[in-house]
Length: 215
Image 1 (tube, one colour):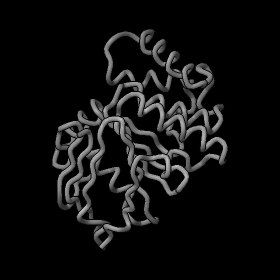
Image 2 (cartoon, helix red, strand yellow):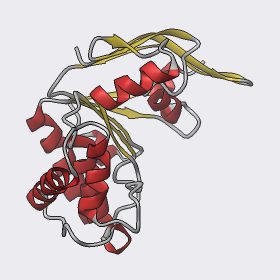
Image 3 (spheres, helix red, strand yellow):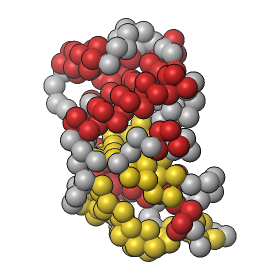
């Protein structure tokens, strides 16, 4: 199992966001997490990433417990096992699409700049993104495809996508969602998507409504 969440609860100072949450995602499978604003979707992602610790329960990524890991250990688990796609891509606007991918590869793969750039160019060409265009000049769909390539460039076992189509029009949303689910499945990775869009959630193998675990 790539991702295992067992009886997890997360709290903020004023209340419990959710409790008793258990889920699992295997390689090649996808899970959509839905729920109203304030139900704890972003907090769940932060907990899976090891950036916040749940008040109860445990979370394992690729067989390593991240929920109780110290910051340095959690960062290593993220680098080795997790790729993330953010809502607005979170690209460096002054860099080209290829350079954005190369920066991500720097942390995970040895070798000089040229091998990383060449890998980045090849991956971007496969999804139809202009490799030498600055991120600031890419369309919304191109930015999200670049973000997807960046998430997958290091061959992670787990991909987390946070509202990956939230800022896109309907046609672009469908194209990006299709590429996201298909590409991650082809890679044999596990995919967890946080989304408010029922059309995107319907593409997943399973859906979990976080509101059902709200205290």
